[in-house]
Image 1 (cartoon, helix red, strand yellow):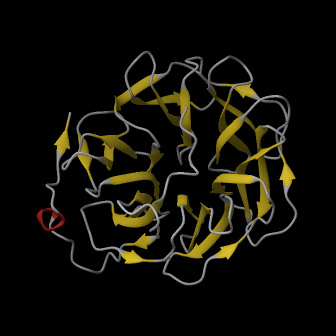
Image 2: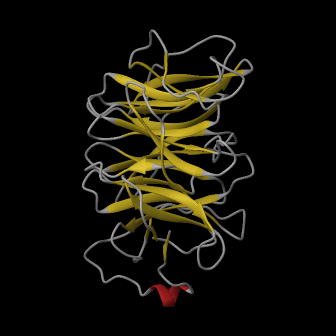
Length: 301
């Protein structure tokens, strides 16, 4: 099971051009772990998790750079944040009293609201595009992990997948699909399922961390075996086909598209585990030739 954070995962966050490898603007400068970034609905702010306070809390930072703002303040393990598409609030996972459940908090901080409970774990939430539902993975229906949905303010939980190996779900912006990563039956793959349930379709081999483009025609995700060998960000059409490599740093994880579809924010693990930062690409600047970064832009089946 891939939980979208780790006490030992030290990472950078970047924004890169969705059309090519490109220059990156540094947003943060830390010696801690900044993970799992996501854009605000207007694209002006990035929310992420960080252990800069000594344990994982939720922070925001302007997408053009600036001071990071801490949103949660407690001794729990808070991670995997995502923005509500309409309301000014953030949903996230938090491990408390031995179990992980879903919570919301206003995007500028404030009172937290618990959405799920019980002797189960609920992880990696993402809102539907109209903000009325949340998808996430849970082990409450089986010994494994399945994609589930529920009303955005809590309520009846509906099981969507039956593989028992689903991870890191993401709701398409047209509302019709939920993408997820799975190793079912024994191969790492990106899958999609109708958001109301139905046949589960493999899109491509690879993963994890699939995320839909704003027009719901493409997905970005992390894959292995890029050039050079490492974990890199790839894109693929929603109907499957060739995968295009977008990054070539040693380890690139957890992509998330900007609302205008022109940028991808992601986490990068450094060779120096004490160095973690957030970067953003400026689309007005000239793209960087892949060869100058020590790799070739690649297309894979």
